[in-house]
Image (cartoon, rainbow, N blue to C red; front, side, top):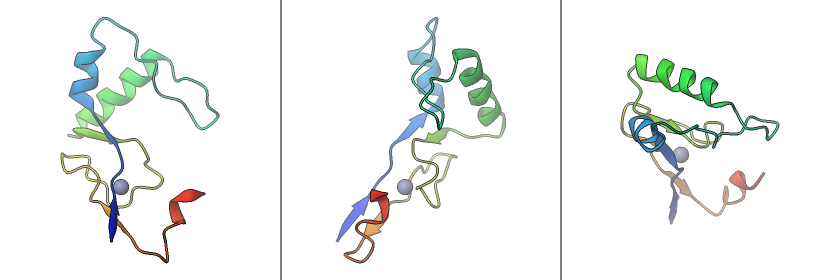
Length: 86
Ligand SMILES: [Zn+2]
């Protein structure tokens, strides 16, 4: 059995990596890059809620733990193997 893990982003890590730079790595649902100011606002709001991680696939990742656990892992059985394929 395979277990699928989604990627997550460490909020503190990203702020550290992009210190003095613009965070323009996020795209909205239309494929448009989210401006740095909005990304930073979003991150600040998440951190205010105590979140440490942000899921890269929030729509797909059920049971994601933003407080440090991240993706719980999703067992892939033959039945739902194509579930994430869209
Ligand atoms: Zn997941």
